[in-house]
Amino acid sequence: MTPARTETNIDAVGFVLAGGQSRRMGTDKAVVEFGGRPLVAHAVGILEAVGLKVFIAGARAEASSRLASYAPVIPDREEGLGPLGGICSAFASTSAAWGVFLPVDIPLLPSSLVLYLLRRARTGDSAVTLAAVNGDPETFPVVISRRALPVLERELRERRLGCLASFYTAALQLGERVAVVDAEVLVQSGQACHPHALPAARWFLNLNADRDLRRAASFA
Image 1 (tube, rainbow, N blue to C red):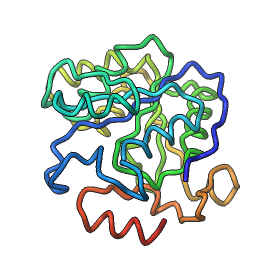
Image 2: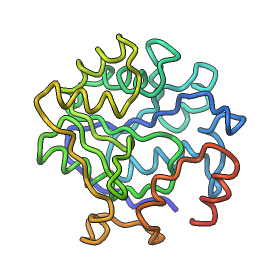
Image 3: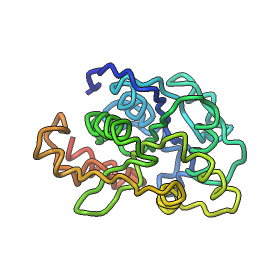
């Protein structure tokens, strides 16, 4: 099911993080089919439904040509630096005030959550905005202000590659806190919902292996 498109006038760009070795899947996750479409198509669709121009970031060189039919591909400046490398390379390629980052392997995520995070980020002018489930912050999706990019790039240079830790470091260095939004509260208040009424805890299921695909198919 393709999400309905919502128009937004926020100066933001969406990025699908499609790097990684996909070792547990045994093949490139981005092109693995789920619900009749490749995972990359689901991710691009989620961000497009928010009204964002979408790029694919962090794809390995051998996969770039396959993925370019879904959205323009931005290569990492240096391979092997994980999602943080993809984030920094992608954000540096645009002048947008906000970057919205979504991994390629969480197709159950509703676009309404991404839209809420983006609007919350702009309203609060937060350096980093993300969601939490059962009180635990989820690394992605994340909305990042351009103000945070220099700190993230420093973390990358110093090989502190943990994304969530880097997000908190960036906010701290800017004299802020990470804005964490409780997904369950958004559901209860009607500000975010899933088209198939999935509970928020299932939105963030990562499809890393065949068993994850089977589990997610039972939810969809």
